[in-house]
Length: 242
Ligand code: JB8
Image 1 (cartoon, protein in one colour):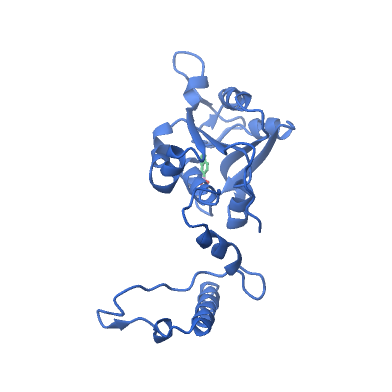
Image 2: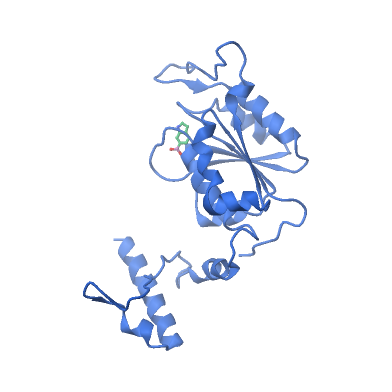
């Protein structure tokens, strides 16, 4: 899998939410540093800035009945159009929903090559589906409905944090040691092309609370070490399938 360099413009990430404070972790750690170093740009937009009326309402009752509220299309379209109008590039609109395609490492590699990602974080029973339909009709947008797993969150914010962390660490210049990314990108496939889990890691001391580091790792025999790690990865992957 290739990790193409973005030569034209720095990657831009927009997040739209009614709880912008939920995205505060994007100022921390590796992602926060990448922003400070201007390798990437992230902006968080409050959906309510695009809502009308004294109450700045962003939701309404569902057609067809049922519990809960649905987020109205118009504030979303105003926010998305405003964000898109600031950039000439193609826009990848990512709508978080439990009904979306399951996020995986392959998708992280794909998204890491895009210039502009817009994350729409719904709440309540989700966003009026015509928002998805509308942007799917636009040649300026690719719309992806994504889920991070088979459980239900209260909204898309935490899922967005997960996806951004997985994507941003793959962008050239974000991680200090690209050798670890290179290793990650082609070491983790088994004989049937399945994703293998990592082998276990150990550091000093060699004995700790009666537990020894596997002797092969102290042997200095790099061929033996590589073979041991591959076997551990395969055994652990098989065990997870039980
Ligand atoms: C309302 O579990 B989730 C998820 C749940 C949500 C919304 C978005 C994503 C919006 N509930 O992936």
